[in-house]
Image (tube, rainbow, N blue to C red; front, side):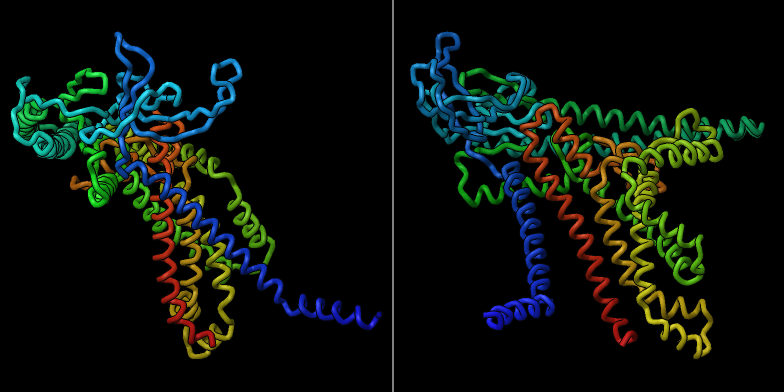
Length: 554
């Protein structure tokens, strides 16, 4: 009996010693991680998809009476929950359905959602001619197309829905032209006027403002004023064209609303759309959401936030990679193994665990107030008290996140340098190369994959940070992007938008949180896609370089 029991125990012990259980355990952990990541992406895509997919619009007739007639509502059935009627009611113990209905029209109902019980509903239907209007403010509007007005007079058309679509595109074109005039052409003129003011102020300070210079400045101001007046006239004409058109929308109770066409970004009839129409509508809405640059973010346009996120990550990478690589080279190649370098490594490791909000406070105090304020006093004194760099902006946000991710790059690069065989260094030196040449032509090329690993980790952390950005440059909406066609084209002093902050703002600061919830999921999905895309690009480059220099390590 003893010999028979020791054999399985010996086999089990050998099985554990072989490492097979740990291989299976590692594989299981990787599988669970991949499934969890896939579940997150699927959940975000599913929940965010309803923001763009046209949902059926129901007409509910209720038991409640309004002016002697049953109350009626139009809206999307958002959620359904089964309840049990209380014991005090006549239907005690019966199941009652509670519907969360998106009714839109916040200016009338005060909120975009209302709760209805199945016991309150006497009839419901899906009218084919229900119209959905996507508006820049106050949410969507549901109703029936009752007509259109032009200059206050009824607009006669054989195909009113098609005319509505054409007029929406026409008005949106006018709106885009007005934005171009206000945000680009007038902005250039204002920028030049400010430059002339600063030039005159500077010459007055050094007592170099002679009559000829003053005449030149006045003549240029006059020309700029003439151009500004011309643009103002064009802007007034465009605004008159924009204000000419209105839509008459009748709700389920027969109330008529006049909605200016300039507030409408899209219109569709969801109950009469087939599957292909819905797919095309989804693609159009997705393209509009990702590419449309609005002057404000009232309707949830994400292009400015996507642009700001990618630009900030690129600038952060440009700053953090040279600093991190140089620091790692010094610690691994030049610094001796003494107490000083040991304490430096400990400090670098500890900096990686500092809460991100602490970096935000440091960035606000050191970069914005100290460095930015100093730059304003040295180079932009004539513009004070209006700050140029002494205020949160894109530059300080990039530097703050570069400081936050610097320990990651240093550690990854130093580990890569330490894995390079010493024999390669000795061989290069034996062939007559100097230490600098060995470092530049042998060591650094082989360490590039490790550097890119640090970059991948830095991008993954920086792209999702929100707390420090709230202190050093990110805002809810910006009138213009940090990049435009006005010299110097890249404006590092401007504030910017970020997807992470948009998620926070939509989820906690929105006037209608329930209506914004699908957009929160969609924004989170876009942030994940951007981070994964940047990482995949870096991983691909790392793989190419690793294969290129693999033969040197054999």
